[in-house]
Length: 218
Image 1 (cartoon, rainbow, N blue to C red):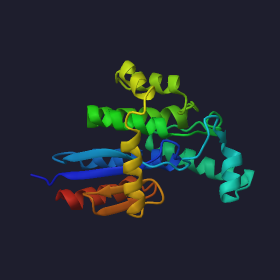
Image 2 (cartoon, rainbow, N blue to C red):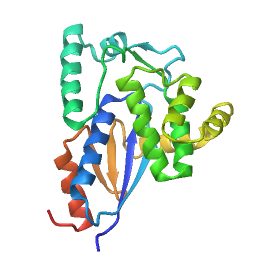
Image 3 (tube, rainbow, N blue to C red):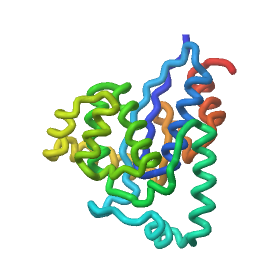
Image 4 (cartoon, helix red, strand yellow):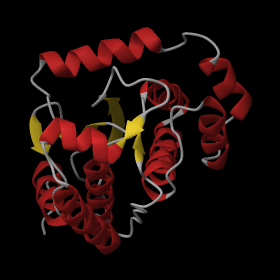
């Protein structure tokens, strides 16, 4: 019998490396297979909490924030696209040309987590694909409700959540919790509340951690 492994996946919908990290983690879980028992939770982190509702051009934003030239942005984007394709995640860098506020998306992820772990996982994947693969505006509430429905969750309940301040305090509290515990970059993947793996690591890295913590031999 394997030891259960709890995973807190701290990330932002707007983070491309979070999509890479999740795809790698999913592949690692599948590779271990067998008796592996995983409890996966998605925790909120906002890369740009002050982003306005209209969003901002990714090229302008990253150029100002990191001092990257258009050539560097194109090079980084191509490397990202190739990493995604190797993991079965499609990036459309032409459509994904703006960065948006993601607070409402995090509120919906919190709600989905209340429904169930599988539902939260499905919504997380749908949000990442909608933004990074389709360039959809994940701050627009009608768009968010459509993404919720595509993930198999209740659209009317999602609309009721977005029309109120429901789960706003809970999301803020979780964000503060991880910031106060030193999380400043995402993805940050925390195993059993103690073991931290950061960045868009390859599946082999996550697989090694899973095998060690679960007691399942390679």
